[in-house]
Image: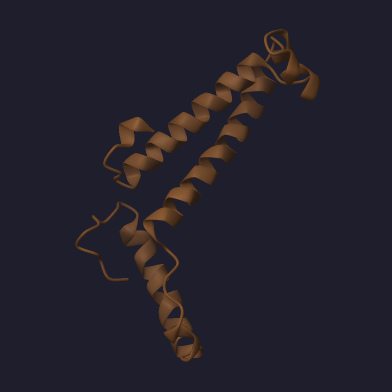
Length: 120
């Protein structure tokens, strides 16, 4: 993978680049005709979408564990629709999910060296 002078390298580049290079060279040697038409799918947009999905998953995991450990107040007492849809949701779980998602997204944006990471 050649570095693009318009995009700075990330902290993950030394770890990910050799793996992607080996996959790319294997693909080019095994499927020479196919590799003429396929470009590398890793773009800034795909990284952004991937990190967003992982942040959402961390939100769900954080909400589950914080709700299990500290959950005492039902979310349905504040938002009746939430209580009707899922009666076991807690306010502590909601706050835990928000905290986990925010922390993971912020760390990811710093690692990926996004210019406005503080807006995450």
